Amino acid sequence: MEDKNLLIANLLFPDITQTPEDMEKRFPERALAEGAKVTRIAPSPTGFVHFGNLFPAFVSERLARQSGGVFLLRIEDTDSQRRVEGAVDTIISSFAHYGLVFDEGVTANGDSGIYGPYSQSQRAFIYHVFAKDLVERGLAYPCFLTKEELEDIRAQQEAQKVLPGCYGRWSRYRDCGFETVKQLIDEGKPYVLRLRSPGKEGGRITFTDVVKGKLEMDENYVDQVLLKSDGIPTYHFAHAVDDHLMRVTHVVRGEEWLSSLPLHLQLFRVLNFKAPKYLHISLLMKQDGGSKRKLSKRHDPEAALTYYRQQGYPVRAVREYVMTLLNSNYEEWRMQNPALPLEDFKFTTAKMAHSGSLFDLQKLDDVSKNTIAAMSAAEVTKQVLDWSRDFDPKLHALLSADRARTEKIFEIGRNDAKPRKDIAKWSEIRGYTDFFFDSLFEIKDAFPENVSPADTKQILTRYKSIYSEKDDPQQWFERVKELASDLGFAQKPKDYKNNPQLYKGHVGDISMVLRVAVTGKTKSPDLFSIMQILGKDCVIQRLCSAANKIKE
Ligand code: GLU
Image (cartoon, rainbow, N blue to C red; front, top):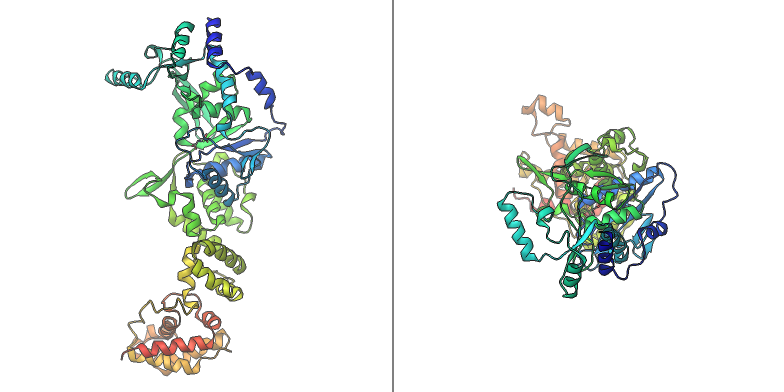
């Protein structure tokens, strides 16, 4: 029996002379302190980075960092049909953008670290060493079933209502002799290498996932493909070899891989590897009407990581939001420690959600508003300029022409006891700052309806002659109040409320008329500060122009 396997192994892998022991020596155990975790992310370069990819990435990064371990980047590029030009750079720059720093792995300038190569396409030789060993030990075999034969088997299995796949009696090449194999190979018949699964139909396995806890699942008994007909490994086989040889201790990945876990654990067993700990992260769900569904690459623009950059969510806000979804006690910690860096939070797997986290853009906006409200005007200015350079060059030109003035714009309301929380993302800045620039200014909102056109015109013309740039905020407001009473409006909203028959309205109506004339909108930050930044000439000019347009 052994001879047969050895003969087949040599026939399939004539050039492989190294053994698994050689590989163990080449990639030795890491000399790390007790408890240090080695984690990785292992994206495929498809050109698309899903927002959900940030979750395993953040968890992996935190676990490694907090334990003094290693966080590495491996590129799983074995599927040549899905490989996209430039996709590896996209992966590297996307994660770098979100502050994820790798200790090891693929970088923009090649590999870094001694456990590489870190791209699976460059590791064929290593996989073949282990594949050959499995064949030698009777745990893998070449399978020559054609596509048609496989389809036929599947149809029969469907008719008999049994598990689809190549296994047991369905697997014609499982127990082939050397001569038959040799003959088929000599004939040039294509083949894949399959696991000779030691699993039993009806067998069960138990397993403890770090996040999901104890799980019981059907044992794998399907002879899954390990190497495809071109000799390239499947994800299942490659990840087992890689995570073992890169000495990964904790595999953090999406829940979609949970169903493959019995196969993966079996692979670790037949390969004589100690299995890493697994953390399967819940899928991101989106509320869609009355039901929840997966955040979908096809239907939801926010599924793409690029969306957040284009929209101009600050990196810190996205990180904050991801943390609130990842650890149930994060928000509470943040409330108690508003000024501390996120890295000071003690991330624990015990506080991770066991089932689907709900993705909610509204919640992200709230988190982001808080994050932006806590930034200094100088930081907002810097981030807005960085963002607009790429995504709104026209706005960038306006904002960068006088940086000090731009900073003053973002200063408004920022140092108040309750800072304004009205910006969620940089793409809102155009609408927030447009009226500071004559080229973008236009009257968008209507003047208040409860003020007659004649009064509106009066307010604008009278105010024009009393406005003084030298006023402080109190003096400024005094003038508005005086104007109110001169024109028959109450100086205090309360007075008007108590005796509406005595007044035309109250001081708030006066400010609203001025606000619409000067900013074009009924909602804006503090009007006094806006007027200061615009300067007297501009204020007067806008008051005149608005007054001229009013038809009494
Ligand atoms: N290449 C796999 C993916 O992109 C990685 C899964 C894993 O982290 O093991 O989904």
